[in-house]
Length: 401
Image (cartoon, rainbow, N blue to C red; front, side, top):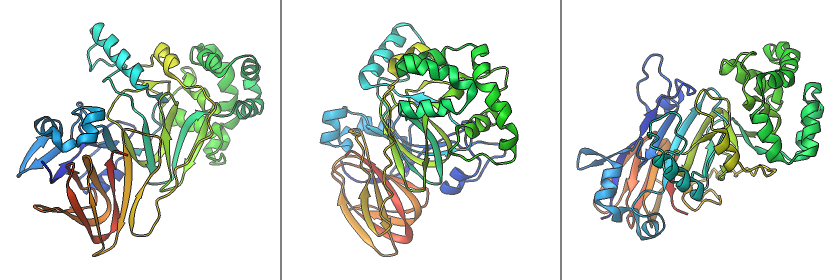
């Protein structure tokens, strides 16, 4: 079975989301006092997209079950009869939790263990929602700020040295590897956290309120996160220390980054495209009211010193460009077009197309779909298709590498 089908994603209304970006992108009406955090396109069991088949809406999961050949031979050989990836749009208005994702083996073991313990899939204390790993890439749609992996040990030492209340941590760092050092911080008492953080908060409060702290400064993110997440000085979160340990990364519009298994990270501000293995396994390391499983966190975290590798911006001229990452579950292609320009290709495996700007017509032998900004299509494996620009812009295509 080949062909192209209109696809409709699903909204996630988490409270850290913004109110305007996603409704404006999708051209949908906004509900009063509603948050629009994520738009999902894929076949994850917790929130599958809907596919239009001969005018009738159907879950993409059911469609794939009925027609597994639409995934493609390569996809089925590696990933079985499930779509390997999940494509998202995020609007990060308030910081997300510090989090990391398990390896495939860790996810399979954790999923089985929690099932055997009888932990319900919707239990807030459930860590493993499925048996898959969740490597992910993101492309910034605005200026975007995030935490990404541990800094070089020498850089951490320099950061701590410049803040008198953190010199006790500096002494610990000199005698411990990063894993033990981080484990001690994550299990610190309120009294210890207060000793480390309250002097920094007091010293920088006025400068923060006067907008005098730069966004490269971890002190800014400490105060901003406490304000945005309503963290009080008598209930400090150990995750706040991570602003002094992790890389603070600033991505410009169009730049990206790849998060592999175990790498701690947190999105702080901005909008992005996110593409990942089809999983919702998140192990949290603070800055969240949700469940923080310290033993699982310490088991999975990758404490290597990371030099962030920025994914380059796609070329601005017409044509196709595929972002480079280490992922085996997904790849993201960017296709730019002007009015009447055309691009022809063949889907070796199932693909999801999302129009980010402008409008296009995608066609194959039997079908032609006009898609405007925010609209999507599912392209079955082995389908030869043509994209024609109707209004200048670009689309992204999620696929296998």
